[in-house]
Image (cartoon, rainbow, N blue to C red; front, side):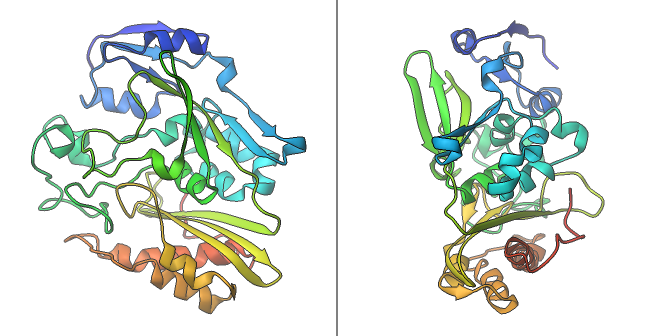
Length: 337
């Protein structure tokens, strides 16, 4: 690990003033310290925001929470998962945060940090490989070990979106608040926050170097909404998902008037399957419609040499998570986390 200076900040303004000359923000530090140890990141300065109290907490917006929730970026995954306000109306997010990694990590890792994780591709993470994401013109995954890589929507880089929180927040139509000393605050929808590698292979999201992710805003779901998230990975593993699904169902009696099927670990950015959503909209939620939605989710899949199993795994994950959201199936014991 390289030598670095540490700027310990207790206010947002102090942190923003330090975001220059290649400085990197440290919150829980779970992902960042791994990247520094393996040489992926070598910052000259770390900006520690862990002690900024105004970046913590879960706050209802509008009259009694009618406008939704605002969650501070430093709120831990454990705090999000355990909050009654989240679990009662935003179950998909509570599930995603509550089944990420291990209990120890969930008590350290923050929601903002989970959203800002970088690629889990082992070629990108290794200092021994200089790949497309590091400014070169080659991706080693196409001809190398690619069993955990993308099966959809990839071009020059088939790395996958690593954030479980982003899957849930995409399903909830959430947005993030970004702050900059020079430009003030702006809000970006989760669906627009992440960048496809073909559009900019050197950036993972639209956040500028002088910006800080300060909060997540989630609109209150419509009456009759049910939701769930499930993550699938290696047996007995607490590692990142190899397939995960976030499902939101707006129900009118036994009919689904609107569905959102969000997927992680399928493509370089979290994605919605509009084909799967169409298979559910206007229909009752049954094992048959859930199975049809799972199959529809694989429209356009292009597996690599070692990950064709995902084309079979995702339909099962989506099928079971739809039925979990609808209250027709218990949580899958084979799901991880």
